[in-house]
Image (cartoon, rainbow, N blue to C red; front, side):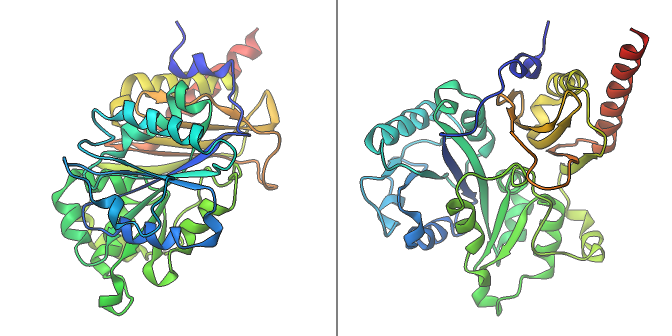
Length: 349
């Protein structure tokens, strides 16, 4: 019987026409609302709707957002990563109905205690959502002063960081604009596939992500951080690294589609619980001019998107894998074995 990913390949999902959704996460007190206020003050964000999730019976985050309007929805008394996923789907539908002709993007500000994984699963794999919306980017705020101690103490903070595409280090004005070396080490270990922005950059990175329109296939698989950290700093703080690992699998030769299907089905079946996020752009041998874009969270994957063309002259497969206690070398070797086995079976036939 076909696995989860194999069952999706027959009907690649289109990309055009769906509203991009950006998830803004980060631990309690890390500066999410401050960042959101800066973004909403921009004239470039016309048509942006905001969903604010706050944990507790009385929500005040909506009152702390300077640009609140009918385009802002507050989901209080619960956490989107827990029992309120149905509320998230309903909120997205309400926004789509209310702003049918003007809605251009949605920003979800999560609770500071949220595990973003279930939220990402909803955005990438729930048919009620994926018909009209698509995941654009995941941003995470990290406290420049308390970030290290927070990451040491709270699993939620580690997982918020691990799945981020963009990391924004906040409160650096009190430190002369410089990120502490200890925090740089933690980000190097915990957010190796994210672009790291310092507060001095005025958070332009996320604004660019939200306003550029539909991201290209190249954007779906970022190449690494903007803020580079020397290798000596990475090793100096190795004792603090968590069980969350990330890496990039690259291939210059196009992969047989059935080999990719078999590899992803095996990964989902054997390590799905530990797979925090997977995203990639893949060269498929059967359609070398049309890259396949894949997104998944734990056991659930969105239908793959076949793009009409490569965004650059490079046609290299790049698959980012983020998870708990995953050995990227083993996963890469398994992909090679399956690809070789498929090629041999075709030759024998």
